[in-house]
Image 1 (tube, helix red, strand yellow):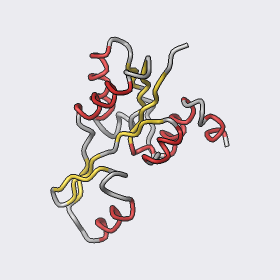
Image 2 (cartoon, one colour; image 1 turned 120 degrees about the vertical axis):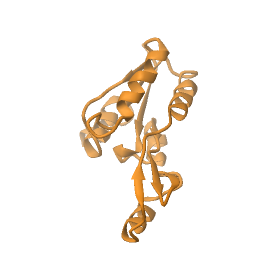
Image 3 (tube, helix red, strand yellow; image 1 turned 90 degrees about the horizontal axis):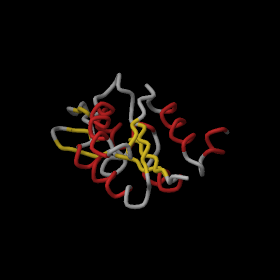
Length: 139
């Protein structure tokens, strides 16, 4: 049986800490606030984000860099046979299309799932793929 890593992005609502506990790798989504880049859950908390929103700061979003994504995949493939990545919906971001393009370089070892989900339903999809979290997803 193949050893499979699950990867998602922070739009799933899975925090870095929770991801470690569940065995899910979480790529932080970048935000630009007043032209400075922050990473969701790494250099920017939810509370800080809402404070910026209240202050009328200039806020925009981006997708994770290809280098960051591929670096994570390369590290995971040292321990795992395959990767299933569940990014945010392709209808909302180019993140999914970028990941699908990058996955072509990995000779079938990286599978990107465009399940048209974000937030709670994206999270549920990730949890269903993790053996340790299957009970939590059903509850």
